[in-house]
Every structure is written in C-alpha cells, then in structure tokens.
Length: 158
Length: 249
Ligand SMILES: [Zn+2]
Image (cartoon, rainbow over all chains, first blue to last red; front, side):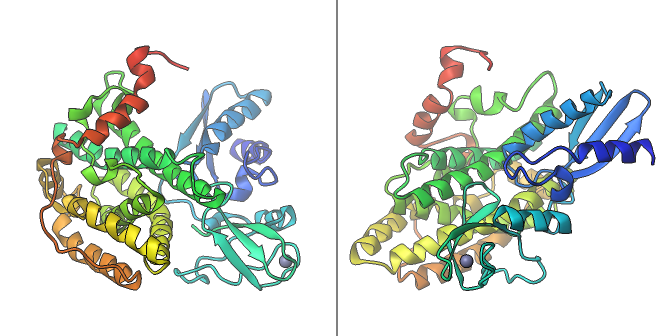
C-alpha cells in the first residue's frame, strides 16, 4: 500500500456529521490524497453549495490525521466536477437504507420532473408520496408511505 | 480587474440579498415544512454568495476576506437586482419574488457554465443543480396559490402585479455585463430573455394568473442605486460590524 492509500484508509473513519452512518468516502466527498515531502493535501468536494457540514468535515479530517502523526495537513475544496449523488458508493446506499433514509435514485433513471415511486425504507412499498422537496437538511426531501403510514427522508438526486 | 470584481459582485450580491430575505422567514414560516424549505433554499443562496466572495477576495488580495463584502460595504456599493431586496410581504409575495428570480437564475447559471473563467463556470455548474429544485418549489407554489382559493388567487395576483416592474431588470446590461460578455467570462443577457419569459408565461397560465402588461422596468441595482429596502436589510445584516467594528467570533 502506498502512503496515499494508507492515508485514504485512515480518512475513511471520518463520518458525515449530518448522516453519521456514512463516511466521507461512502459519500464521494473524499476525492484524493496527495503526499509531498512535508505536507499532506486532502482534496474534498462539497455536496451542496451551502452545506454547513463541510467546515466540520474539514476540522475532523485534520484531527484524524493529527492523531495518526500527520501534523501538516491541508484540506483543499474543489468544485469541478460537481458532486453528484451517483458518487455515493454501493456500501453507502446500503447504510442509508438501514439508517431509514431512502437512497437517491440513479440520475439516469429518474425523470427531471419528479422523483416518484421512491421505495419506503421501512416496508419497501412504492406507494409513497412527497410531502416537501426540502427536508431536515439540504440533501433530503420529506416523503410519506401510504402503506405503513410512516414518514421518511429521501436523499434526493443531485 | 475592477470590472471583473463588479461582475462577480453582481452575481454574489443577488444571492446574498435574496438569501438573506429568505432567511428572515426562519421561525416564521406558515407551516413547519415551508419554514424548513425556505431556510434550506436560503442556505443554497448563501453558499453561492460565499463561493463568489471568496473568489473576489482571492483576486483582490491585500488581506481581503469573504466577510468584507457583505459586512463592510454601504448601500451604494451593492450591485444586486432590486427584485432581490424587495420585502417578504405575505408568503405569496415571497413566492412570487422567488419565482421571478428563479426563472431568470436558471437560464443565467445554465449559460454561465460555459464561462471561459473556469472557476466561475464550476461555481455556476454547482449551483445550477440546486436552482432546478428552487424553481420546482416556487413554480409549484405559484400554481397552488394562483389556482387555489379565491383569496389565494387574488392575493398572489396582486403580488405578481406589484413585483412585475422588477421582473426584467436582470436583462438590462451594465458596464460590467458588457465587459464580461466581451471577455467571454459572462453571459449574453439578451439571449436569456425569451426562454425566461416563456417559462414564466407557461407557469403563470397554469396558475390561472393574468400576466401584467410589460411596462416600466425599475432599474439601478447593478449600479448601486437601490430602493429603501436594502437599507433595512443592511442595518440588520451589518449591525454587529457597525456597532463593534472588526469584531470576530
Ligand atoms: Zn412504508
């Protein structure tokens, strides 16, 4: 394993503060690690433009690296290519579902108009309806299930 | 450089001011879901403003930070559209303001993705994805209120009539707009007019709302000439820096 790969592994412990079952690697926020003589550069990309979790993620990255002996870490944010929900890993999608959040539809599959027939994470019924485009955080929409009657969060496509 | 900063500030100030207006709904929304929706959208706008202010600070150098732009400029230095600063009014007026802005912003950011300034293009591409959701939200509510009860119809029709004179300021070119277009950094505003207006017409029709006759367009925002509304916003937004200059967290 190269040093970059080792650091990548270490950084996989950093969790998303708003969905704390996902690591930043699961989310696709962690893009790359570059090691030079006296410095480690970690490249991340924001999920949403105004996502307040990014500042915390940056602090957590530096803390984890420090614990592992890397004193001089810098975190660089890149905007292009823009993050998409398609970068959430298969593992990440499974974790979301277990956590009770419906994972995003694949962008190719969902029509631009609406995200319909989102399977309920509790009972898998597709007899669901959107209550609001905007849920408890910028990345989620609020749905309800007509079969089990439970409301749920849907991680919306971007 | 000066014109580039002016151009970036036009875009950033729109996002900052309309985002601030939306954030005023925090804790006051008509129902919880709408309170959350409006503050979520506010956050997207503030995120865009921050990206652009950070870029300005980097270009200008000399120890400037992203906070200098929102906190340390007086009214005449702001370059946002007059539409963005108009007060929230009732929920329907806020929705109408957002709808008029979102229809323009969707076309604007789509075109800005092709900017020859790569960083600006990346910022636009990022925000465009969110803007699609914004317009879905404001457009759906235009239809729901317009094609709703007699009262909701009449009230939102009044908002459309009242705000219409601010709807098209976005298409009037400033010196910075012309410079940016020439440098292939900016967007051809004339080309956005027709698709924006078609989009508005389509949704207003579905909402059973009358489209006001196009008449006088209020202008001046891009040149720093604002309505009294901006003063109220700044006295709130800049209170801390005015009362305790250079204080930090
Ligand atoms: Zn269910």
